[in-house]
Length: 176
Image 1 (cartoon, helix red, strand yellow):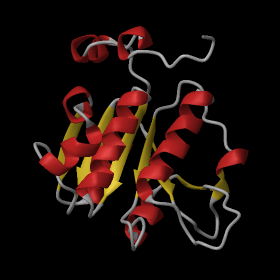
Image 2: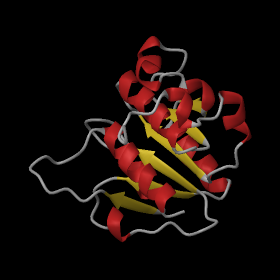
Image 3: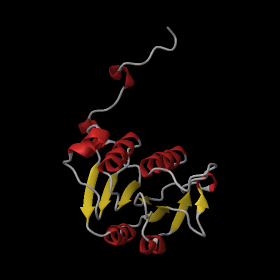
């Protein structure tokens, strides 16, 4: 049976302890006032999948432990390092001071289309994802080093934030 689905044991995944020993990716995620705990959980699960170094939970984001986060994270909230701060700008300042290039996932006048962007080898990136309604706060956009935009071809103005996290992190890992 050539197309048999793999069993979980056949996937060769690392344990949570082994995960923490893997080399850093140089990528962190910043969630700017994400209102849905399910979206926060999905971001954790995606961050785990792509071995993202840390998730910053800012403002109104739900924080672990949370049954709603766990429902979509499936335990990734335990494998991926995280930190909460009341203000997204606090995280942005700290990340810039630590040498990260801050990138907002946002539609702006000067945004770079994702398909035209290639991460620079050896550079560390902090990717900011915004609120489901308002997007990334303007002061955070102003403080960012650049903005990335996911090309879209339909009638809707945006993607769900958890989908955007997956698309952009896959792109970063593909090209780094």
